[in-house]
Image (cartoon, rainbow, N blue to C red; front, side, top):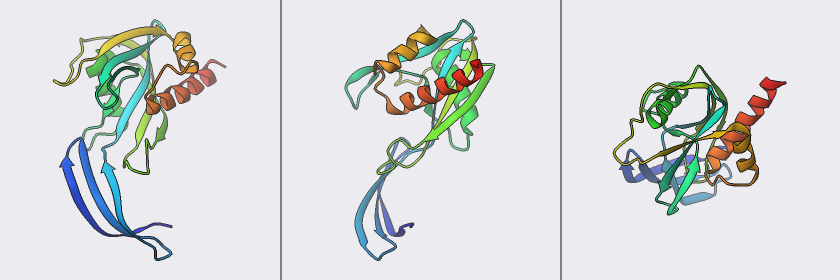
Length: 181
């Protein structure tokens, strides 16, 4: 079932955009002369709920689509960093909040036909603001606190464009619903 990689050539080798061209052989002997793969480190995101029962949403400009999107917090895991540590760090950096409970609710591949890597999905609860944002130089993130049920309605109205974040919220709401029963 697995393909044999006969050769790989890196076309770009940047921490946030590593792309390669593989020459592969399929199990039935068919040659694939050019298969392009974008290598990404693991990513994390969380539907994060404060002690007051509000979800932390973030708005930021996303250059590839040329729009300001409403999303949930998340980002790249650092090299050697486990997903749970990465999401706690990302939440603190992007929002200034720490959480008493962080549960992994899923793991998805964003576009496995082109992209390597997985996104780890979390539900974070018990959030308290303990600091101010500590953003990277290229980040400009506006925080919006929205009641949980309004976020559920926004999701049902298809108001979130980031597919990985939609997956996270769907799994997080499943987890919340199972806890409340």
